[in-house]
Length: 601
Image 1 (cartoon, rainbow, N blue to C red):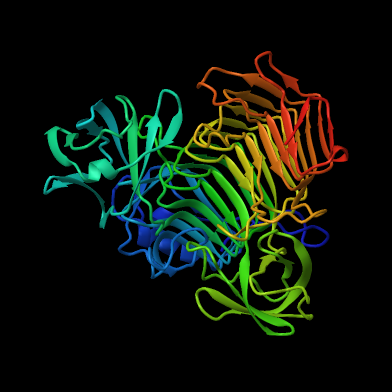
Image 2 (cartoon, rainbow, N blue to C red):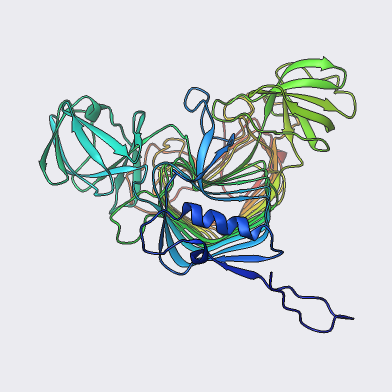
């Protein structure tokens, strides 16, 4: 290792410069189209002996194949069930395990992955930076074809060159490098409008297919219910999330900078039980001039059970089959009270299980699943997995007397503060941001353009996805929300505060201290804000304007409040064609201060 010292040895701090490791010294060759996996692995291994390292890639294209890749075994939140992907083995292109103070410097290089691989894993590592690269797959997991003609009996489409296919016994089969799509999910893209709409592959699956020109396929069958029009792009993927784009696990102080994630299998960049994450200028979108419209088969960035500070800034998300950003924890259900201070708890959602959701020293919240009412907290003494689905947890003190089978536990130690700023969200089939964390959240200076569902959704549930938890301090300010929600009408509120509280407890509120201020809402329909069981909701100094993007639905309230208190609505500017209607239910007069008319339901 080479060290450089500045100043005197006595009375001055010693500054250690990074050792630069050039991947070409280990055999990686840019623009060779050869397999760089083993060579880059050796460079990463060499960094383990250094105090501070820069792994440098001379600018060019580097290809990664699974043949010589590290095989890992991870249970990843929100990915796949036992039936979908029973053996959690994944091949990884770049594997960072137990490392400190390492920077991967791409110098503008392109990393191209083959087959099904996780692009990189950062596990049990600290102070890791990945920067200045673009990521793509030789054969992306998403297949795309542009509709040329459509009638009740035939569809003619041009297949994107990246979407490998063949016609077998009159049926079109999508395939990749050592994989075949079998479980289809389809989304229709209207490129000129920036809209993504739910669709289906079912009529194509049952139709007769024939190639009538290069990359052009004619389908003959029953297309009477298919709504694709010429110029629109039908995008098709396997709905099973057997892989993820990238995985960051049990690590801290992780920085991603100037990354172009042009295609990702399954979930996107998943961060699990990690802390202090700074993602700046990460662009989840198809490569320019690629002709593709989808970059990620599911979420762009997914954060499960993280803590510290998460900062997402100067990012762009375009072309996703699911949510660009999802931040949450996991509720586990109480299945057995073993002793006065120990219990068994279970992962309930089919796609989330198998990881250590609790550890010794963690603080937990006890809550009733139906109402989401928190009735106590405790500190974990010991915790261990006793199966893929269940954990045995021993607490330092006796369990609350109120605790019963069917209640849930949340790990409140592993909950992050979140900042999302200066970013853009567009061509999204579902929501823009899902946020459920009890620490400080700031969402500011972003643009949400035609997200298919709510631009911002704040949930918390212990009965469906089991994604925790409460929000206690959230600010949404200086954002632009443009024509969002067209896939979720009539519940197409731009911002939806919707905890899955199936039972409302008088005087108990799931969320609190939510401020929505100085934003611009450009809406084609009436709904703007909906809130349930929230204490301390402020909606002030926002501008709401009407557009003619789509025909509005039946007249509804702009703001809907259910079982909320401490609400202030004031100083908002409504355009001439917007009716400032507010409805309330399960509330009394003192719960609300508003300068617009109120309808009580």
